[in-house]
Length: 159
Image 1 (tube, rainbow, N blue to C red):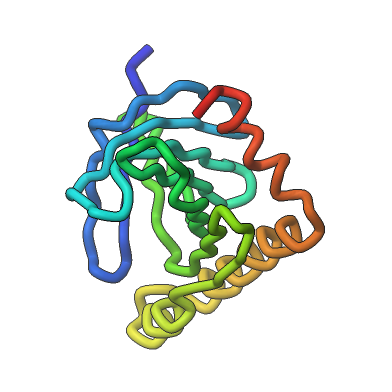
Image 2: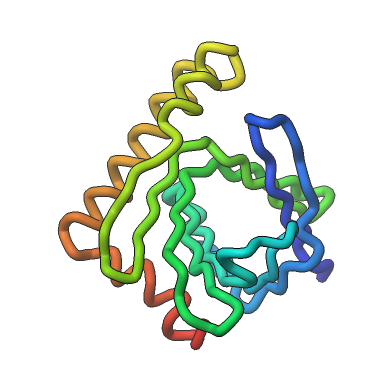
């Protein structure tokens, strides 16, 4: 079987990038787990691991500093589009993000970009509604102390 090709698609700015450096370490019907190095050099973090929750429209990532310490958990609200004929998964970033720092503070970011994408017609009313519902699902898990179950997908693999 061909290796799954992963693409990261952004609405703002408009781009679609093949994540050919990402290594898939686990793939089931429900999740895909990858490890990776940053596409563009960053001073705050160097590498990480991600878990794509295929049924939830959520991707969580662990960002690590060069010294191996945890920088943060970064959670993206996403849409998945599988292209069977190409064995490719296009992961579209729906812009709303949640950042969880090592001290467990939670910050929701980029809701202004979500509104901008809607205003510019880059996201339909149904797409906006889906993104907000997925964000609500993620925040409900975080605030009810259930996020650890999502984290376990990476932690149990030593990532």
